[in-house]
Image (cartoon, rainbow, N blue to C red):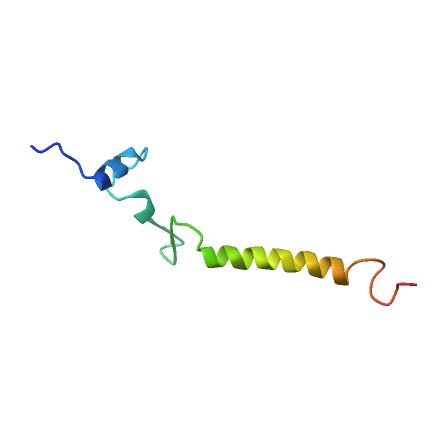
Length: 75
């Protein structure tokens, strides 16, 4: 019997409790009788840029338009 393992097989076995033979990143979990499914993964860089841009815009908007007493109340 050949006991030499590929790097993919070693990564699969390093995950505690994983006895399926499927890598952690490739496992698809289903919820609601199969109507919703998800898998583990990272957040895309472009989406992180959108999040940061929206946060900066919200700070600008909050400071510019909600500062002071409010619109029309600056005496």
